[in-house]
Image (cartoon, rainbow, N blue to C red):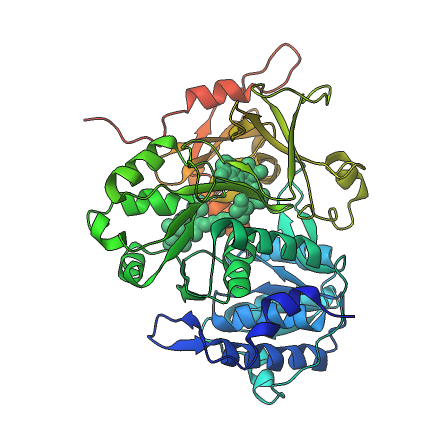
Length: 507
Ligand code: MLC
Ligand code: AMP
């Protein structure tokens, strides 16, 4: 038996002195050198007792060593569990417990704080810093640069990615080798990636977009990446002349458009710009084309499914649409109430089926049954329609979800946190349009009778317990929440009331 994901993504590059990562310090990491690091790290995992199917939770800065840890997990048959670097200790404690991780690799600076809960969870702790230093690296340095690939089947799990949920409790989406491999292969073909491509990589590597889309596609194609620690306009402008392709969330593109140095000449040589993870406004698409002559290719995906649709490479890339289902992926539109299939042109919930669709939420069979049907269709919770030319339009969300700068925030999680604060009777959290982040978080709070709420104290508590991107950027205090006759909070009214709180004041 083989290890299909390792065999397709990594094995072909063993011993190849071709460029893989262009790093900010001006050095280049070759495929061969990267793969030696993967082998040493795989031996390190084995020496720490990590077994096939064990979860390896990873909360570290973006670095070549962090990417080698991903490769090592695949090679050793372990399940890679990357965690958003913005998560707080409270959040990390949950993920380590819920995943039953065998090993937790964290930043050296947080090791002392996470030790108590890693011990409680019976999980080993190692460290890896942004500079590639730490106890994991120390151990890896003395390991062999050769490791026998652990055999895995297509249905074996390769990754566990947490996505927040409507109940406020994050769910671990189980992704198999087949899920990741089928999607990466399809994307390479759809977007015509080759070994000549140099992808500008400024995304985080703890989410589907930066890891499974950008990195897996580059690995399969045998191309290279300009590997930036994060999105910073100056560094991106500096790197663009050396890139052939770029992937980003819409905020990347609006920030570039705000920059006069972002010109047609700078990107004339580029082959492709791709956007996803959040809606790209048709206006941004049009401004981008007017400025650069490039039409951004928008695609649509999710943690649970990786990518589902894409605008065509050769055909018309239509602004405001996410294109067609990828090869092998089926998309249907269904009535949210009855589940009946709807004809083209009608708005309903998008259902997705294909080799990309995940294996369910870890330890949550009921939640899995609600969303993943026996016939293989996953109910996305996104509202959309298929137009007369077959293009899919995402027109809204049936799920109560806010997407800020490409990160998902479920209001319920923030509401549960706010409701537990002293003096808070109840709360409602909504998203309001934001010029930079697409949407941002507004918290509306109602105090207990006789209590006075201090927004500064609320902010302080949020800073302690919630990842920065989830923190409400606006706090409003009301005597009561608007409710309908059934007693349900009318979030639509709140959204209307606070629709322009983040818009620049005219004049
Ligand atoms: C950072 N901050 C955010 C934020 N990112 N606030 C709201 N929304 C965000 N997305 C806050 C920090 O907490 C901090 O707050 C302040 O902004 C500055 O931090 P920063 O790190 O300097 O931020 P910045 O560089 O501006 O980051 C913005 C960003 C980044 C858009 C570049 O968020 C980003 O790279 N987003 C990409 C997300 C992504 O990869 N999504 C893919 C999901 S996969 P303070 O108060 O502490 O100063 C998926 C499937 C699919 O959805 O289809 O792809
Ligand atoms: P995540 O849970 O981070 O995987 O986010 C997945 C969600 O992001 C989807 O369910 C959509 O709501 C949204 N999304 C991803 N790509 C797009 C897109 N191109 N347009 C609109 N929404 C998108």
